[in-house]
Image 1: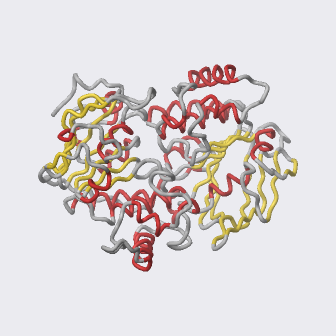
Image 2: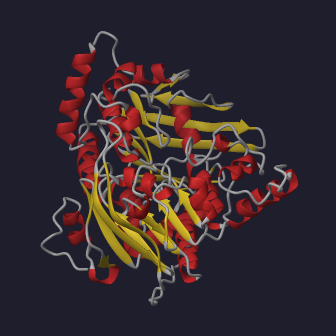
Length: 506
């Protein structure tokens, strides 16, 4: 920051109310030029709302904004981008039917041709190690690949203030390292960052300032480099997250497995599954690690019943050949599934939480087909209370919840069903440290009750914390399994490139 240079951004007493909730209450925040500034808080603390106000996507009810020393009213994202403010959203703002290049083109200078935009995407992707094909339709991308598109789109605007809302939630450790090189370079060049993450070690590595929100209000300002994970947790949630109790135990019989599962991709940008062998036993948590886009989505579709093209015997559930059973048949046999896409696949955005129960649960439906609305509401309220979901009751639309709170509800809905087998993709994506500890603890409790749990996650720390055994996925193939106690992060990272043959253990 140069002498007498004004603050890049200054918020004064920002307040935003919604029916039944005050998202932000008299929030003030200051960001210097060339500063990486973290905004920390538990799910529903008001972080995303505050970022959307800065980006012009939400209008505040009270308060003022200064940008580069000038009072501004940011009426829409287009005006924000014109000022030099860009944002990477937690929930992606991409059109599924358009290509990567077409999505990026929408937010850039209209004088550029689509070919020029595609060329710039490729150059920026190569420069920052964010591999993506500009010609791919967005609906063929994994969540991690969509995240890359959002980041590249923001970088192409050459921002002076870059807002990042959970940018690494579905990136591998290697990809995070590459992204941090990019972000530190941007900061050194004078760009300011507003950085939201629940990964406290990231905040301490990247940021030199931190504003903590709790219940929509500022509860503290600090330099995170001078804090510990424990002290940051206390500032954020008022306590340290409970330690997980992962006790070694002998698993029971195989409840779920894939045998010689091979499937051709359904679209040109998908991944072929090649001779997948996978077993999950009663009373164990099995993890699948891997870089996003290596066949995890195709595998989960085949395992959950969304894709029924496999040979019947290629997927076994409780000794039954279920490869061509649909999701409902598999649920009736005891298999439940948490997809990585929260809105649109895990929940219908416009439906209430209670009605979203009906997507995978039928206890409130009578034999005659009538819905017992009181029982349904009680079911939803039970999950809201058990998993501490911050929502305006069971009638709140799914889309009104913060990402982390919706994740808690969806995971809770499936755990509460007492499944025999549970498939979970990215269980703690965008979830705060306290909620992540609770979800992981609930998964371990399921395991201890005899459930077979399969977790697909791009967070190696998470997999090492809760899993008994690990597989790695690369290029549509699955490694042999390795006991978690025998694995190292470096080894699993190497296997993510497909280099497991020389080290594989049964």
